[in-house]
Amino acid sequence: MSTQKNLWLLLSIFSLNLAIITLASDPDPVQDFCIPNPILASMIKTHHTFHTILPCKNSSEVITNDFIFSNMKTSGNFSETGLAVMPANPTNFPGLNTLGMSFARTDIEIGGINPPHFHPRATELIHVIQGKVYSGFVDSNNKVFARILEQGEVMVFPRGLVHFMMNVGDEVVTLFGSFNSQNPGLQKIPSAVFGSGIDEELLQKAFGIEF
Ligand SMILES: *[C@@H]1O[C@H](CO)[C@@H](O)[C@H](O)[C@H]1NC(C)=O
Ligand SMILES: *[C@@H]1O[C@H](CO)[C@@H](O)[C@H](O)[C@H]1NC(C)=O
Image 1 (cartoon, protein in one colour):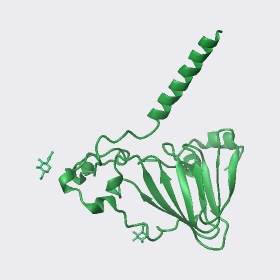
Image 2 (cartoon, protein in one colour):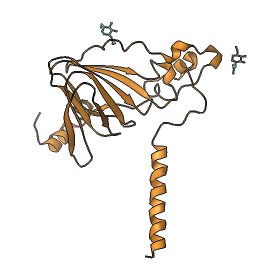
Image 3 (cartoon, rainbow, N blue to C red):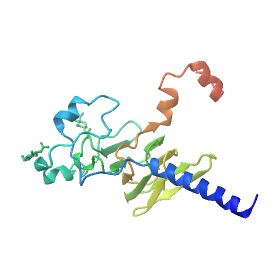
Image 4 (tube, rainbow, N blue to C red):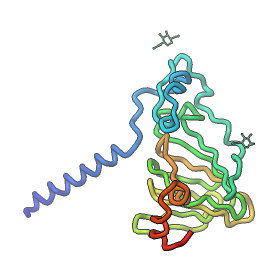
């Protein structure tokens, strides 16, 4: 192949990648903001569609508090794995609607874990505010990138990759995570595999175990 053809091929692949990257994020806003109209939002609210872009209310009715979320001063309730997650997304923080971002406060009790999970639609950036947390993710070659993070450190979990955390210190871990989607989605590996109703025979064959 001539050099020119090679260059053309490279350019085509590059622009194809760019197109995929562009399609991979939330849509760009077409106005300053879009505070969900509570009446219209409740009309289209179903279990599966609630997080999707919601219709806006008249901007003359928008107030400062639509852009402020006050429920992150304390942790949420801890689960049996010692995990408390307090998410902020357009369902509880109207100002985020259409802005392509969301946020969460995560607290982990001493010895507690955030089980392996992933977000199909967002990269996550965490910032440790307090404590020591063994934290990491696995890439699609099953290589693990993990170590203990201390207060002040930031780690990124690339979009769609399985990640996990465990409190390895002697105080509660507090960290904040931001997502580049208003609806990152959450799939927990243990419940996706063992709690979802997949045929038991298949699971036994897949994992080589007997239940
Ligand atoms: C928004 O509210 C303003 C002030 O109440 C009103 O004049 C305007 O017609 C409203 N716009 C729409 C699209 O309802
Ligand atoms: C925590 O649990 C209490 C008691 O069940 C409940 O009233 C409260 O709303 C829960 N808090 C959160 C953030 O879910």
